[in-house]
Length: 155
Image 1 (spheres, rainbow, N blue to C red):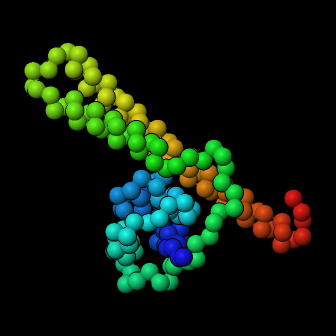
Image 2 (image 1 turned 90 degrees about the vertical axis):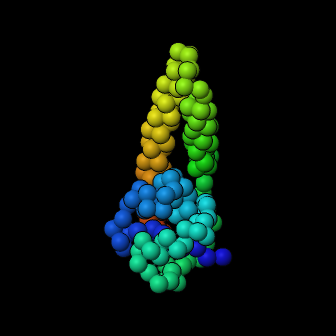
Image 3 (image 1 turned 120 degrees about the vertical axis):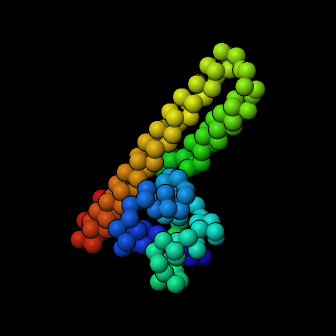
C-alpha cells in the first residue's frame, strides 16, 4: 500500500505542518499522524493537496507505507482532544439554544463552557506543538542511529 509523502511536499514548498493543517482544515495532530503513517489521508483531501501545491498528480510524492518499529507507550490517538472539543461544542450549542430569558445559572454555565472550550483549544495546541517536537526528536534519533550503524558503532 502506498501513501503521499506529505513531509517532502511540505519541506519542498517551505510550509510548516501547522500551515498545511490550516490549509487542509485538519488539526495539526491529525496531520502529524498522517505524516507518521498512523492515520490515512481522507480521499477528499487529495484534491486539496494538489491545489495547495499546484500539482497535476501526486505520483512523484507517493511512497510505500512502512510500519513504524517503535511506538512509545505514552503515545495516544490524535482524536482524544477532539472528543473533548466536540463535547464542549455540543454543550456550548445547547446552552445558547435556550430561551433568551435564561437565568443567571445559565449565564454562568455558558461562561464556564466558553472558558473550558478556550482552555481545551489552548491545550490541544500545546499537544500539537509537543507532538511536532516529538516527531522532530524521533527523526533526529533515527538519523543518529543510522550514522552509528553506518560507522559500525553499536549502541
